[in-house]
Image (tube, rainbow, N blue to C red; front, side):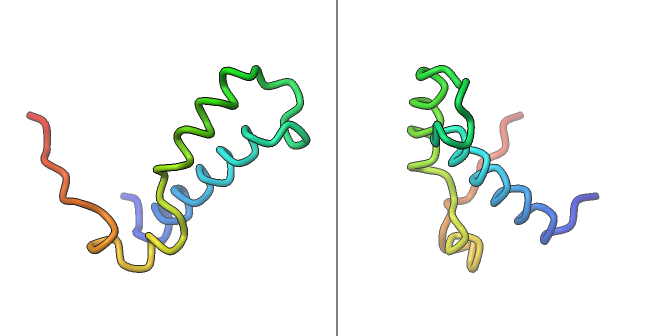
Length: 65
């Protein structure tokens, strides 16, 4: 079972990973297409301030059956 603090750290770690993908000094051999996709994703990805009160930052998710 994943604990809430582990989930929060994972979300923030992925955000850091996306920033690394965008930065050519951090990841020099990443194709431009991947950098562009990471850049588009990071615009809508949750940041640390979204983790303070997730109930306000996110809409409810409807489960797909």
